[in-house]
Image (cartoon, rainbow, N blue to C red; front, side, top):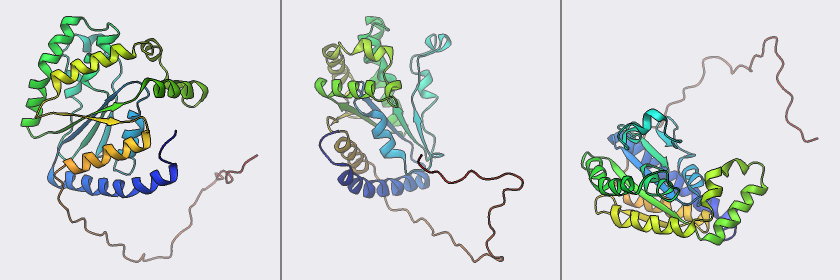
Length: 259
């Protein structure tokens, strides 16, 4: 990855993550319901951005939702139904790694949804999101942008790295040659669903590290966070001397060593 170096990135990320922990404390104290949608092309960097945002937060409070292909039963339901079941409750932060916008993206481009279904979806989204926002949900929609030459480099990196190869799905390979079609689908989606009550924010993710910092800074600046006192836990002195761990009849593994 070119651009911002790892050392500089970590130095800039740490204070943002500290702010995020304060934001999470505010959300818990006030009962705020926060939903952040991450959309973008394959390899754009959604998973990495979600990890950077959530890695220092309480996993009981912050949930990542990455729904797979709908089941036969789910395809017979109202399209938004399985997403509604994953919306945040009071004090929760939910991060959607792709969302209901699948219908306007992969489903539209790859032919998994009929043209009439896509049009009906685009007509319905503004009203659906209006209901969420009017009910008090704090909704943020981010589109992570990525040029095609950068996308190709990332596909090659995933192919050549055994630990990342699982990220390339048959759908990814089929969609790889449809960059322009995805652009057209995205523009139609933005035109129909970029509203005052639920606007889109586009973030340049050609440099993923810089993109993560930009996205987190924007999110923090847009949340109405106010300082919340978090009492310092008291750690009284133990009544007895500290004990060593007891393994019973079992022996612990020896420390890791390189061979």
